Length: 116
Image (cartoon, rainbow, N blue to C red; front, side, top):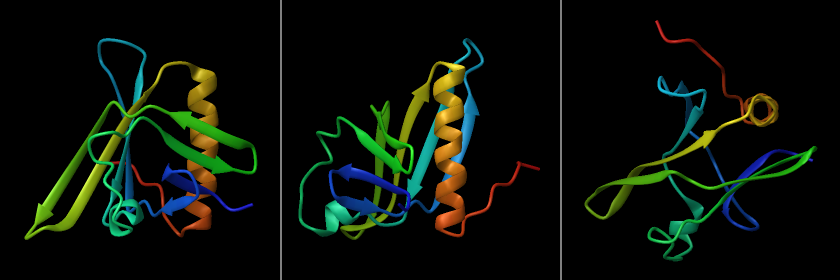
């Protein structure tokens, strides 16, 4: 099974980049997913005001996350970038999310890098 990210069940999205952050005031880690296009928007589905979950799917199963925020940037009614962020509180959940992202990176030719 290949990895996928879905806002709508069965409709795969393509991540353009991922940013991993840590909240200073707690142990929570923040994942920010960036998309240059969204299949859900291209299919004419209006979901920008009602995004309740993101499905991360791989060989281990589904990870359901609730977005903390969702931002859209448009230029002349054309999506330029979408940004979805969610928090991961426990170390076990973080390990699982990271296994997913390593598989996703491998399946979709993305590379992990550290900021300079």
